[in-house]
Amino acid sequence: MYSFLLFVMFLILLNCILFIISLMIAYKSQKNREKSSPFECGFDPSWYTRSPFSMRFFLLAVIFLIFDVEIILLMPIIINLLFSPSIIYLSSSLIFLMILTVGLLHEWNQGSLNWM
Image (cartoon, rainbow, N blue to C red; front, side):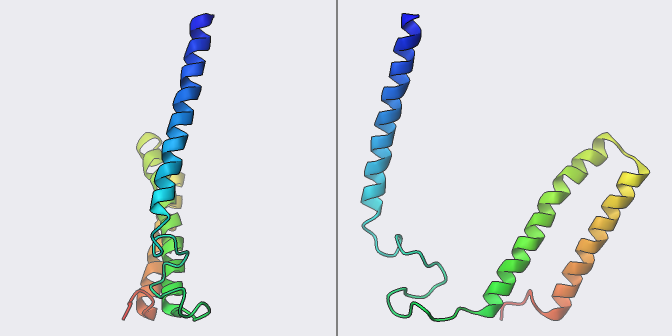
């Protein structure tokens, strides 16, 4: 019983030490103005705070998020096809891949993937 209490107290002490170290590191890294800035779009936040950013950047970011979610949905499909190869599951996976490919080709033809 005492060894368990000693172990819990050791973990609490270790947790407090790590918390204090992380606070000291965070305080030291907060002195840099550029790193503590909330903007990451490439413009100086103290110069123009309400300047609009490129709509092309926004569109590319949204397209990236959509295709990123679809790539995440592909991982379970691959794993499930390895363990349970059925015709219905295979056909639904191929339909999903066809929709993904048609969407990619549409965005490519519209020129949304070109940055310049």
